[in-house]
Image (cartoon, rainbow, N blue to C red; front, side):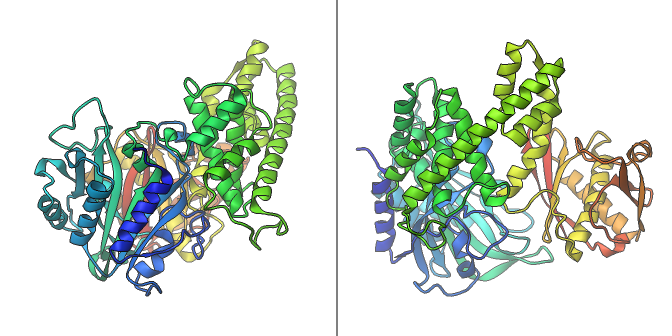
Length: 591
């Protein structure tokens, strides 16, 4: 039996309805009262006020399917499983049932309704740390359901912990369910979540703690359950597929691309996946009344549509986006708005608005590419090599794909500085990453006291990392809001707990020394000769501002700073993780 999107959603909602849950509609992709994020990224997002204790009008048990957009991994789209737009099945307990009932509901739905083989199931639970104890409670429930002990893996906060959404608030451990997706190999006796054949299909979060400003984890009065099951990934597993684009939520769109191009999906998989994914996501953003623009939501929409157009050129497609968009609309008739006062063209249906807008963006982009070709030919006429800066200018200002630059240059037997281009691109990709969380690079528009403190702390962090890890460490990007700082730097491995503690202690030592922060203006050449640190790859004017914190730190910077380190407060690293290959990321707060 083939599982369809409609059938899975219907079975899920009806199952939890039978367990006393009230069905709530999918919220908008634009968060209603949260300026800190651009899009709804999970089913729990619209429910935050109720998870914090407000009473929901429909009661304590809720269930829905939520449309979501995640843009943090646009560049990853094209593989077997990544999607920008997806649907999330979720059920919630707002201070009602707890771990036992939640896990039993999940197990019953997986094995009785979806009829997944229990011999192919594996689960993870929270291993415990200094903040919270091992989740033996969840393990006990899984064992009672006859999940073998060797099929239960315990992992740390990185894998089995949710939240808080900010620096403080509700958070807690989760238990995740995996299914052995391979039909060629029998599921091994012992569950290893790092084995790619184990596919995560469900995540149950147990919000049982409140993280305080002091970093303490105190038991919550209202304990909540928040679960999430991806529709697309679950359909892939249910139908015994290893390619998410073969399920019915994607197949008609892929078929339309095949029809328009006269080429087969086989051997063109990545190209067609990118086109299908990006146009689907674009359709849903257009449906929210968003139009292509150079920043925030409009920037994300423009990037999606233009990337789809670039990939379409690889299949010799032209004037095709609205036709693919129409196949998306036909696949999701239950979501398309019939008309909305927020839409500019209120006298026409949303379908017309969407198709007109995506047509317009394709025409605009094609015109931009033609202009880019003129600029490129002009560069070639006067230069023997296309520099990284020229290639990136074409890419950023004219939307001219690097592949096209290479093709044209090859015809003229001219080389392109690809390595340099990639470095330029890496610098500017921070914009894409931060746009998905609603903040833009450096956060310097906010000169609040908290941001100023965090910004100065970033200088101390930069030098502390260099002293603990080595002088080769360089800043690769930062993002500062009034709540936290985020700092990227080059380093080849994960920091040890001892190294993190050493960095944190060194920063706090300099804060406690009450060092004066001095600003001087000087030539860029002089600043560099004095050893002032500069962000890797950043462009600076001839005259720069240099901020010195005693003999400890000297940096070229334009941001807000405190006058004395004593104003910063206590510095605390909250997370250390990978940002990209060879790049680590630290998140920290001041208290």
